[in-house]
Amino acid sequence: MQSISDYPDSYYVATAKGLISYPPLTESVKADVCVIGGGFTGLLSALNLAEKGYKVALLEAHKIG
Image (tube, rainbow, N blue to C red):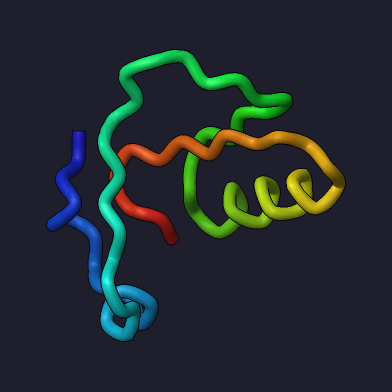
């Protein structure tokens, strides 16, 4: 498994204010759709589904983007 330090910094990381860290899931979450991966494709998919009214859970192992 790769660590977060294995990923190069991006413009987003360099300019974002107050990066948020979320704890691991410890309980069940109800959602219509679960998107695995918070890269650009996963983020766009989650956003499009949410805009259509679906309750979306987005899971990412390291960092978004």
